[in-house]
Amino acid sequence: MDTSPMSSAVFLSLLFIVIGLPVLSWATTIILTRWLRHKERMAQVTAEETAEYATQYAAKVERLESRMGVIERILTDRSTHLSEEIDRLRDAPVN
Image 1 (cartoon, rainbow, N blue to C red):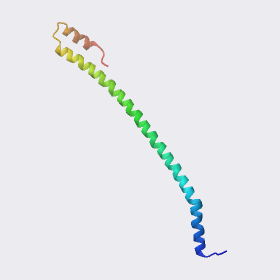
Image 2: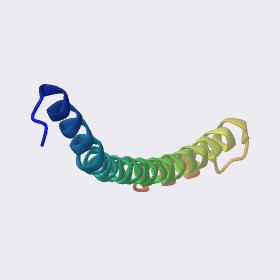
Image 3: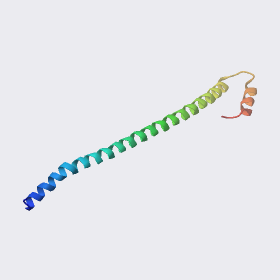
Image 4: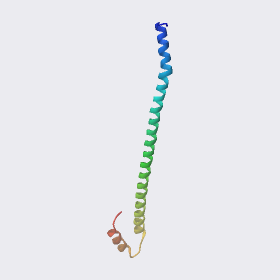
């Protein structure tokens, strides 16, 4: 068997190609798969949080629109029951 440095280099190169590259490819695939799963989960959590905030803001806007409607009605109503309605609204609990 030839033990020259050239044959050792060729043997190590072939060993790396046959064993090293598949192992490196496998490890890279595992790492990228986990990273992609993590990114998908983070996107899902962000979407859920965004939906929750949107629901909260929608409810808040609905309450504010209701209160604005009452204020508009009070400002534009010229009836004699206006002071009674104001007193009733003042005593009512605020959302």
